[in-house]
Image (cartoon, chains in turn purple, green):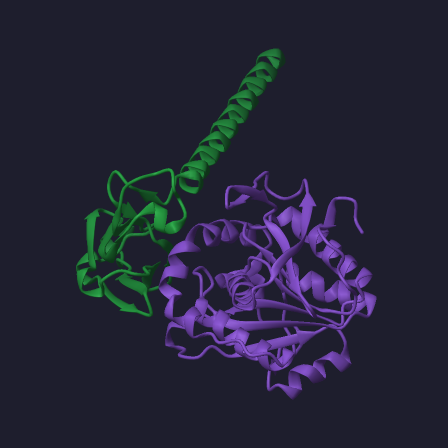
Length: 247
Length: 150
């Protein structure tokens, strides 16, 4: 594990689990989806990230301080969730630390949840979900669940690095991305991605409340979205809209 | 004479460095003003929406994320050259406490924003739509007349 980022376990975590990752990105799709997942499944905090590369903040819950990046879990499923924008400079060390920790925990599969911005998002009623995988055999999981494969193009941000590092370490990993707004929180896209995730994991996730409370979530998420936008600009996130040189 | 030229060059370099420093300071001040200013203001009972300004070849498109507003109350108007104001009432008054901010009293009753348009536009042809909680304002760019080029 890199020395700049540490995963601090609060209790023994058994190996061989599936890890779902929700870090701030376009539309906050992963953050909104993982927060909803944690709440719906009643997961508890089992570990957290400690790093001087993260903003100097403590997130207060019930008057007590917490790290902005935490790991929640229960039997069989671990969820990594951040409630603060990750500084662009911290993305690579954080991604590497997550992959290293997952490797030490012999993760069965890592699934990162994210968004893929589309300019005509307002015209789309049900956002489609696309994906990419770290290994050829992991691509089969996407095909089996009718997830369109991102055949070519550029991915930018923590998910891109997690996928690359997982490919290097031969760890099975997926990135699921739902069509979303570039600059605005998108709970509908989060609901679309959770629908696919529930099929892949074989668990039931009712997203009715997520859709119903969508407007309230958008209002609450506005500040983390604004700060995330600034970090995404530093990462040159708009490259994801570039036309690939070779298809 | 060479001493004079050298001194003049050195003064000029100092002046340019000073200007660069001023520009940097101005940029940083501007950035911190926009970034660090809270999005909401309970004294004015309003919250600012997230917004984007896109400058196209023929028009400027301003979008704003406006959840929980009453669509029928949205007002869009130019307040001065290159400045568009948007105001809308919230469906219900929101207290900072409802958003997890317990140390500030007050209410948010409207969403309010001013968008700076970076190029000349025809404000008389302004039109807007509100879909999926996103306001989209379209302003045709002002065409320069031939006489203006001369």
